[in-house]
Image (cartoon, rainbow, N blue to C red; front, side, top):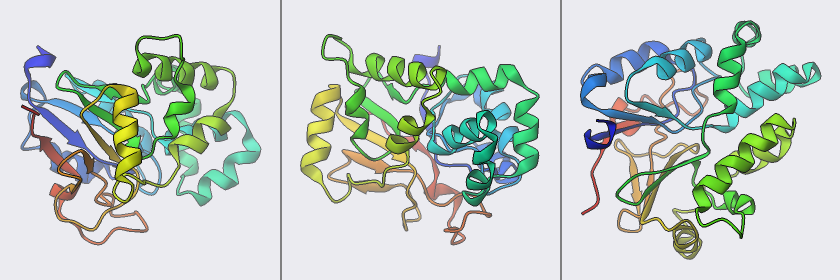
Length: 240
């Protein structure tokens, strides 16, 4: 059934669970396939709550964001806690995650990339750094990337995953790299979040080949500008 539902993209939630409830009211879970682009934690007070809510919402996929990676890193290396808090983390969220091993495992298993049936590539940051994880012997670049990310997290190599997922979005300015990335992944367009845009709708670049859904959704985000919900949460028009 999930493949027949219209797709709803949810940009970086960053712990604003109350606003997330408001944003999803017009989109019943049984009528939409909901895709979170990552960064559900930090800034706002309810990061772990947002993760659990997204995990339990029917017909929903959640991608790995750099803030989830940072939180896992701080959980494993306690000397990283101060650094993670400087990124917007809250100690109560870390303590709650520490007591929920199934949730820790679930976060690690989130894909870095997701390809939709129409050739749309969903990722966290609008950058091509993921290509370092493409296995040249694999016929499916998306699967090879996701497998490698899971291996790295299980090998305590959060630093490498953080480096890629925290890279600045480049696709709006660098159309050639965007096109090369789409060719490398056999995709037609890409959807992402990570770096806030200044539009009241998702920011669209290069005739729709790149779409940014990070409208600084969380009211606790340092870049929040009272943007409407529609800047971060919106239906994805299918490609013809």
